[in-house]
Image (tube, rainbow, N blue to C red; front, top):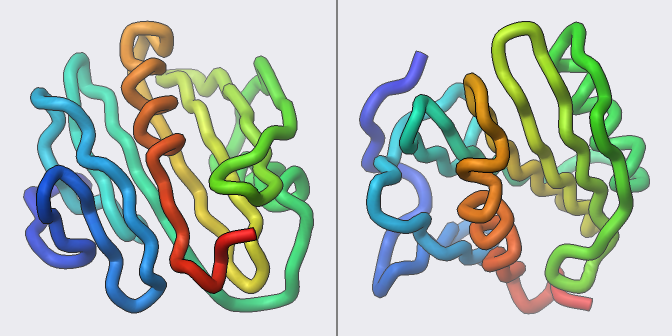
Length: 150
């Protein structure tokens, strides 16, 4: 269930800042409205029923970004893996995956910076390519707290 949301990371000068972990991320462009999504630290609903979400957690033993991304995929249920590759986000290892689910398309980026992990998720009912540039610019704007930086 998605509803309007005003708690969590605070917006200032076009950037959201999460106080406890210290990370920042740019606000998405006009047309995206902040929403509440279960388990997400920050989420937005956008055009054509698309949604963006960021979940950041700092707990547990370190694991590879690829393994963490695969765990995220398993949690989404039955899906077809369209693309999987490794990359870097804010100087740390990350894994990107594109999934085809029965009723939607999903693109995820999982960043591993032990002891923290960030999952960036895009969900669209149809055309991934229409909003993919917004998602890619959004996760690329992520900046960790100083102690998390490489």
